[in-house]
Length: 383
Image 1: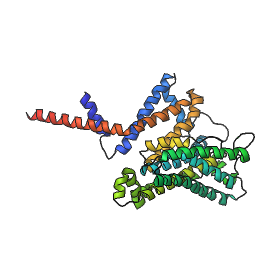
Image 2: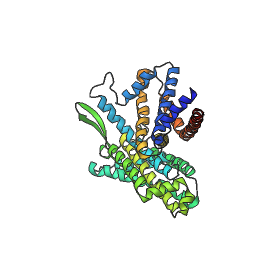
Image 3: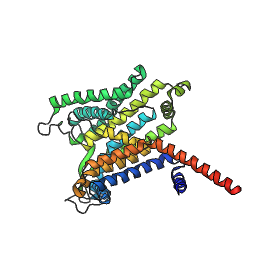
Image 4: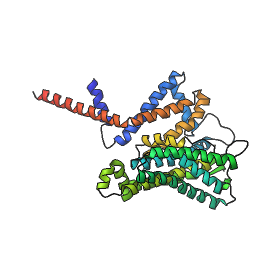
């Protein structure tokens, strides 16, 4: 009986070519099962809770809607929240490929959002000038911070995690100072709202009798996903980044300029973080809260791990994590499940994703045991 179970597991997950897809799916299923147990322990129905998660994101229809609202309005709002998450996950993924850990995505987002806000958000520019300029500022600011971290790693061998953490604190409090001194809204205690012309989200767009948000950045996020995949899989730069990430000594021996590759990888990672920042602070939101770093930059680490550190996988895992975070409010209000349960489920996904290497190891052991058992059985039959 035990051997039969092992054989089924090996048959399901033993194909090494498909493990990059199957193991993340397995991790998601396991985390959802454990999450369902947690929901049941607090006395709620897991099926209803997960159903409400999908309803809260517009994937499934709700029982009733307010005026000018519908499933499509909820889904467009979900895409608005998804856009910065995709950019942030791609930023983490690029760094991972080069063997780096960009834990400073949130501060890179903050700087890009702040600079774009004060230069474009408070200006009288026309929309056709303001929106592209916001994107350009996001790329430049994010790349600048990422490039500095990469240079410190290359020139002085300063661990990028330490650099990112220090930059997080510096930008968080410096920008907070400027917001509170010069740009604060005395009512909301956040930065003043930006002009509509600078926003990367079109608001109150009427369609089929509904008023909805239209995130302009979602198309760019999809293009960036496939563009990054092309760079990593089809270009010399992508090969060099993956070689450096796999083994720096071997890459250097092969003639690859390791330092230059590290800096370029962090420049690209920072640029994607900057795009996440402008789509978050000048798209999903319209103002900046002082002394607060967005959780998107940290959730993106879980998203990238779940996506097996690949661009396409990161995009799909961003979709899943955004469902959990965006739908948790409706789940809480309708099913009575504490909103913190969503954070627990996200943490479980991260935990099981982090165990991917161990799962591969256990499957390999099972595969060897099944093979040995088959050989023993074959010898017995011969005798």
